[in-house]
Length: 411
Image (tube, rainbow, N blue to C red; front, side, top):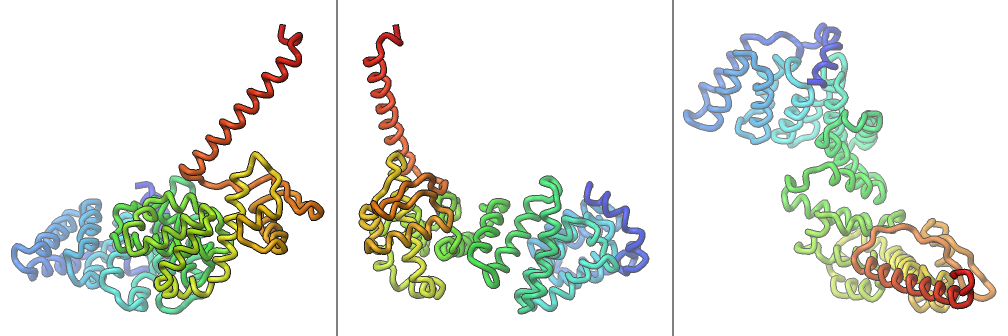
């Protein structure tokens, strides 16, 4: 209702220029009645078309909108592009703009195998001269997101990027309650799809995680969930800015990956999260064929070895947080590096802002003052509990010593 209110303000100027805004005609009613009469008697299609005809004749626009959404999403009615051209288009300006945008998305998804055909239907919706959807922010985001994906499928990367940027500007400017979860998930799905092909692993990872945050995960087909989990896992592994795996490992779709053919990816993620070099080497050996089948992992093989080494350093630093000084010899043993390469490892970790500290080149040690925060699992929580117990005992011992040495202060 709110969306429609903002559209009504601008419809006057739009209607003078667009044939899509003309009043509901008898031609449209005759068309839908003809479709209903021509459908197989007693079929779902006949019943659905009869409902559409009845709602249109009585001008029950809300009920008509809801029924259209059901009809096109469930594919009960065939020839949906024709249905739009000869029926829906006649009263499009009477419908809720967001619902109309969803109807159009379903139609192109169901019947347009060629992205160019789909673009011919959707692109006019982005012009103030040809569609009232232009005046509704949420409807525009939905259409822009779909158009960006279609342009990418058609090989028009620059145009896809342009439409995605237009959608992002609207999303960034919108308030928390101005866009629904469905609309935000549609945008982030489009952004993730774009960055999967064009952008960086880090950009894909960021947008894919946001997509899953807004998406109703249970509504996704199993195969689709598994693909998202696999793509996210690989992006996290090869992303040169991603050194925190805890949040990903706790995500529903990633945890479910353990029961799929991609279980080895989940095992790799756990090895990286713990900086476990032994586990990493074991997985690389056991699943060599599957890893070699992924070109992106093969191309980043050296980087993956460097990254797991950095993760081993971070895990070691996390374990020794109560003993801030680490010697180069200890680091070399933990990270399986020659002693002369430890200095470079530390400088790289500091440049990436994963740790802060002071390197002592004379005594060959580092005093660590900060380790990058991370989402921790139960194992690390148990470690923290153990360290907290040690700290409490140390504090208790210090207090007992002070009391024994300064009894007069406590009397």
